[in-house]
Image (cartoon, rainbow, N blue to C red):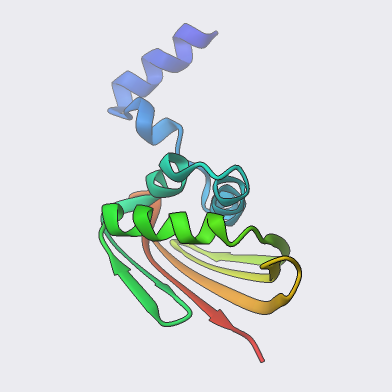
Amino acid sequence: MKYIALLFALLLGISSAQQNKPAAKDIPAAYVKAVSDKNLDAFAALFNEDAVFNDLGTINRGRSAIREFGGKIVDFQGKYVTREVLVNGERITWLFNFTGGGGGYRLRGQGDFVLKNGLIQNLVIQSQR
């Protein structure tokens, strides 16, 4: 059975990297997992090479800059709790609560994702009031 799936993937021109991309609805969970696991490679792999990431006004352009900034995110040692994920094609709205910095920092947040080819092209994290 595994060989049949591989054959279909080859016939359709789907690379193994494309097969391993999370579904749109799972992108926020993959983001949280990469941050929680402190896995900067997995974090960066969610983004396109020319992606833009705006985290509360701090803007990073390109996968390598986003990966470097991801180090600051994982060092903050926080916990995300997803409230809701809304998917509309290649646009995702992620509503979450975040507690970090030893529990002293709390954020009721929203992440707005735009995907391109199954990866994050643009991500804006902002506070909800």
